[in-house]
Length: 341
Image 1: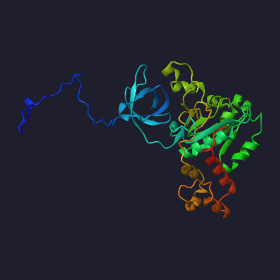
Image 2: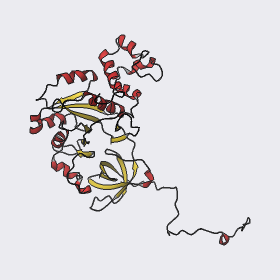
Image 3: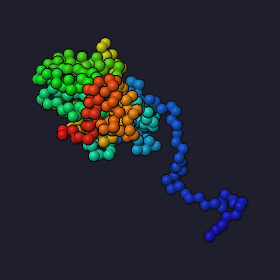
Image 4: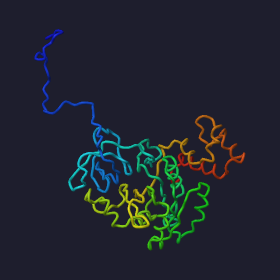
């Protein structure tokens, strides 16, 4: 075996040749200080459609991001070809910190959480008053996901011509959730969209609801076809035809003066269930500011629905409405009961 002395000549050192002919790998990554900022509009099979200034750009995630994935609503930084021309591809090199996240799991036994939407201001929960019948348990679960993720909920009740909204509104009155009631006729003539629009202007709103409640019809009324074309649509990227809500899609909301930039509507696929395995019960209490101070006397890891919970005394002393405590506990209980039970 050859041994080298203290004063080794470089010519004596054996260097393994680089068969690929490229530069050796390094852990130092470029900072991409000149990267442009954009917003993710939709994700399809590893390709992300982003809005960069006024251009729709197709991009892929950079390898250095590892397993970190970008979702609809994410603010990202891109490099590469940002022209938005056909057959061009940019690269996402950074994902900005999120202000809110809408997450769900497949069911309550699934430990793998899925981020559906990022950076949304509010969650519009669309449910029909009849045909199909309302599913309060699903509404409760969507409320928990909204409170847990930092989104403000908005209840949109459709088909009021088939059933009155009084019972459902009474059920959610103690939550203080804003609501809009619409009928089938109002959906058809556009007046429903006008009233819903009042709650969306200047905000990023994610829409959720199960099939048949009129969610997509309402989104179509809020975002006319000509505005959809300005976002590049999905078919220009995937070649699969018009968008059918198989993946989340961000669309620019039209302002009162027919101007752009007044808000965003994010249409999400219809849901059959909404798993909450990822939800920490301690975060749900933040949505009840009138009850939160009363938790200071709770035992450690209190579920807020046990014998020693300090909230009972807090409410008994008149600091909050008993209906609010009941509503909180009803939401927390949805994590223990499957939707539909």
